[in-house]
Amino acid sequence: MNTDSKVKVWDPVVRIFHWSLVSAFFIAYVTEEDFLSLHAWAGYTVLSLVFLRVLWGIVGTQYARFADFVYAPQAVKQFLLDTLHRRAPRYLGHNPAAGAMIILLLVALLLTSLSGLAVYGVEDSAGPLAGMLAGAGGFWGDVFEGVHEFFANFTVFLVLLHVAGVIVESLIHGENLVSAMWHGYKRKAN
Image 1 (spheres, helix red, strand yellow):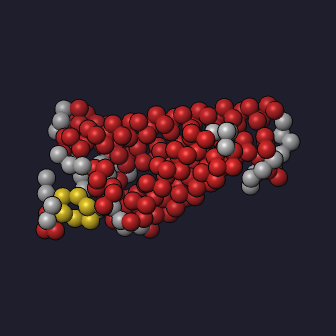
Image 2 (cartoon, helix red, strand yellow):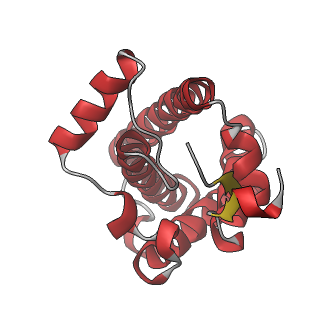
């Protein structure tokens, strides 16, 4: 790809956020309670990255901003229908379905992280919520644990949908989106 045919779409903050989040969530998910300290630090990293991404979605570069990729539900639905018929338009930034997925993932990751902090506070009397939740009892520990596990598994489900969407869009538009998220460039023309 020569320099005249490509455009920088994904800035370093978006790319570093993306791959750091993949790593931190994977570490948190596979360690569970077996390596609690590593699990907790990976969870703190996920939570910090979510806050960073929300901030960058407000003040970041053009394609990083929520204003560039958050669409009305009807637009998302139409994009998905067009994709099923292989006639969805190509977007330089995130398409409507990808924008909806980003919002869903951020919310799911936030709820996973916050419920994890609650579990940590109740069951281990540790973390920033320990003062508020330590000694809350087994019932609340079970409730927060169930919520935490649900959202962790729901996040995995969303990640699998996200990967499937990336594959489909890459095939439909003849573009390696994984590579683009690595180096930041996409081709200019359809």
